[in-house]
Image (cartoon, rainbow, N blue to C red; front, side, top):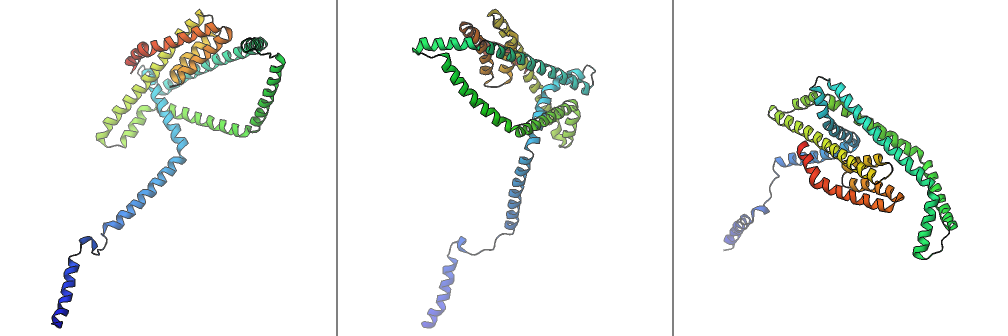
Amino acid sequence: MVAEDESAEPAAQSVAVSALPAYWSVRTPPRWLPRALLYAVLAVAGLIAAFWVLGKMQGLLTVLLVSIFLAFAIEPAVNWLAARGVRRGAGTGAVFLVVLVMIVAFVWTLGALLVNQVTMLVTNAPDYVQDLVDWVNSTFHQDISGDDLTKYASEWSSTIEKYLVGLAGNVWGIGTVAIGALFQLLGVLLFTFYFAADGPRFRTWVCSLLPPKQQKHVLRAWDIAVEKTGGYIYSRALLALCSAVAHYVALRVLDVPSAFALALWVGVVSQFIPTVGTYMAGALPVLVALVHDPITALWILLFIIAYQQFENYVLQPRITATTL
């Protein structure tokens, strides 16, 4: 009996071991696991290296993206000139010249407006101060004199002087930033000129890197992008022209000074600066009118609100439907 029990014990143990769950058994790792781990490590390292390279090339990529967008915007005009026998390089230069003249005229007009308003403000400052003192005294029952305002003004001037001195001390940093911005602007202009002047050749080169089945779709998407981007810019320009004309008429009727400059400001800023452009555009003519006559400023504000509703619900849908 003892011998039978001893012989039966190993058999019972083997049965017990075989009855264990499969995941408790010891197995060697599959052959593909080390290779998969190596590929995963290489993929993570590649992603880290790619993000590092993108971070280092962020400035260049920004310049390229802005240049491509601007080239899309002016390429319809270049194509229009090229279809009439003008060489693409000369046509691109002509479009650049027209845009440059428009920008210079806009800045010059606003600069003249700024100089006129600052000169008028400095000239009439004593009258404005006295009117303000009289209004505060009569409204809030105070007894403020011009000497008090002179004291406050001297304190403010000393604070501003200290700020300007500190700002002048950092002139090297400001100059470095300005030079960097100038080089970025020149880079944008250079790439924009190339993308617009050599647009067909550049598209052909890009498509040559793709499979033949994809080239047709890429060319079609590229043409649509050029057409719609140009249509968007031209619709904004047409809306800016309509807005400038309407506001010029209103400002002339209400006898607001610098009507042409203010109307140009409203037209350009309200159309080419998204979201806050409308408020920035309307604030300046209201402030200029407020200096001369508060009632006129109120009429200007009402006209701006009414025109904005007309533009949003009548003018803009019609123009964008045609250009886009």
